[in-house]
Length: 409
Ligand code: HEM
Image: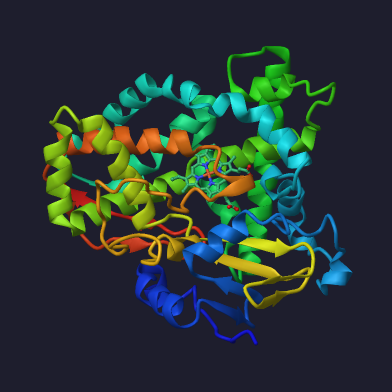
């Protein structure tokens, strides 16, 4: 019999530090049913990684069950424009439709193509640090962590400079819908943002049809997959999703990463020492990977049970939603030695921060490169960076990070 428990993932304390409670759950109640969220939660690494590879679970359910069968109310007219966008997000599809779109984009995300972005990334990182270095203080989130990945993903897609200011507010409004228990105001704002964003991408796509460029929007506009192009809505949703996915988590990964380094001065010193050593690049790879494991910016994802099944004695009925706490798996001592220690030299770091299986993050190589370049530059140019006020955590757990990180250097 499945134990019942309510996990208050919206509490400020839990968002700021979920790890003590997650440890208790892993030890005492690794699987439980939360009536309020109507989800079955899993908190241990082995369970999460096994379920992520199990094809009896998928990211969506509406392709095999109707809303009535699921006991859901009809679609809410309040969020019609948000739904129009979200219904075409390929991450929520299953193979073979999912595979079709993923393959179309794969070329833009190969490690080799991402590596070719290194010079631009280094220049952008330098400029952002130049902008604030003389003032001796900054809000790391606003001044550095946000603009860097936005510039990179906008470059990759081909969003011109003058169109970039809206990307962050549009994305922020849209991703609020991924949190548990969103409000009517969240629905309104997400729908307005989705509509404006869809229109904007539509204009860019029209321009690329007329004047092709060397960017991902042009590639998606021109794509031929056995004669099947992307539909206009698929094209727009895919671009928006990429723009959002391409910066939201990276902003939070770098802010949380820096905060954790500042809070662990011995690790900070180790990183400073290593950036001047011949092993710098190898060290940065393991160090940034460990920062991603230690404090994940996307701590939880859901899956739907696509057929009646039993997993480890737990009965999971078709149409059940399961919540997999990747951040908890990442701290599971049954899998990682000294799981609660940020060990910047950790090897074979098979963390769950980029997911696993069918939907493994396509942008992992880009995110990794951004973090490596950023932390190298920070250690060299702001070696005494410290807190200059209290960090402010985000309002949600599903997309977890900092709204503000005041620093002095
Ligand atoms: C630190 C930064 C990032 C983190 C932690 C992250 C994490 C993730 C995770 C966990 C998933 C899988 C979701 C699931 O299991 O349901 C995912 C999917 C995805 N991510 Fe990322 N991501 C990051 C950066 C990026 C970037 C820079 C891009 C670039 C565009 C990107 C593009 C995508 C795409 C396209 C998918 C969907 C893959 C699919 O369904 O096949 N991500 N990401």
